[in-house]
Image (cartoon, rainbow, N blue to C red; front, side, top):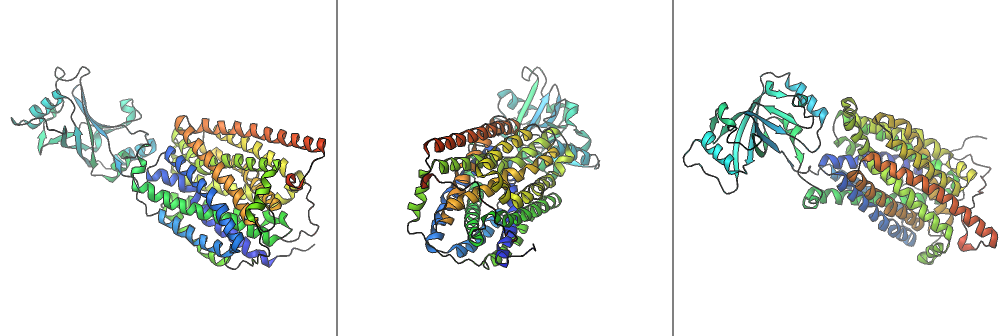
Length: 589
């Protein structure tokens, strides 16, 4: 039997490759890009719990429009162009304003500038200290505004720093000081037995343009507070960009993030791109099944080109981000999606039937208990995939930080690119290729049960990691947890779809999967990671997935026994035949 190429399907294969290449370059990195802009896990979890809800609305809505007016291909191309514009705009969003909080601190006549961030980047601190030792003549100048809270502190400042009879406490309790620190007075955190702070020792001080004598900087112990300390809480700037990069922190917090325009610009651009992707995926799958006709088991042979595109560009983008900057992912996205618009316009799509009542035909499906169980399965698998999509990379970066492995942190984006590459080439590619045969062999229901079980094992394995690089072997499970699950989902939806409603039902299934499942998973995981840790969050989801796999199995066993006992299989309860016979002539790829 020779290998024949169906030319009618080539544009579909090219679309899957180019579209997934373009989105693969940016989508996986958006949560960590949001982190770089200054948003917390809670904020990102909130955003990614809202985005799928937009898909919940847009997928069936535009699916109905496409089926009703038979404008599948036009809608397809328009939303690819929209995705390019929305993603490209994200690179122009400035980061959240940052602030520095430095304590000007005296303890028993020894002065220092002390910086204690909410989360210390130990690798950046070590690198800074190493570079400081290479420049022995460097002097760092701090320009600070400090709050003076106590009367006795004001008295000391007026008497010892200002030495002016008219010196008095001002209304806002703020003073302006300048301080200089030599390179050899920068000490490692370990020397202070405080690994979460950086100390700049023995600073020279200028107040009101007057140098303050070293002996006068700190108050005498008899004047100071009970512990002998003199502490001013300050904000300001340093005349060295490397120091500023080290000591600044985003000023946004989890209660005030909506007050920043950067948040709304980011949320709007991400929302538009998410809606575009949702429509492209659902309408695209409907077009693909239309082109395949009765050969729906060959869907995986088309979709595997998406895995190739995603894996290759995700790997390339990870390496380039580590080598250059985040901007490169937007260039890669544009380079892939622009030709996709041309390829998609060449699809040979000629719809041949319109449903007389799309809403009525779709509504009949909800009379089937098995179809309802299928929708619940879509929600469940969506929850767990949402965790992986939006928080796996964040979890890996946290592991690198906790592990104290600076080499891992230096190449973390390369690791993330390798994760995407293994997911695509080692997982999705082979499983998309065999998905039609595999699902036909064991049945849709058994495949869905197995997907949940493997997902549980995968998530628990993540929770056991101590080194982020050990994530790579786990990623081979992507073939089962996404390759088989996505194929089963789309094939099942295609078979039960009443004639003329394919795009609508694909949109509805995708909306349930993302709008309910991925949204819920993102929100819950964001909360768990903030309240506990990523390790605990992944373990909770893993145990839940295994429990649901057993529940799914026993529910279908009960339905099988019920149907047999009552000899009851109405059209409303009909499900895709789990004994699909493979076509003898399967030489089209």
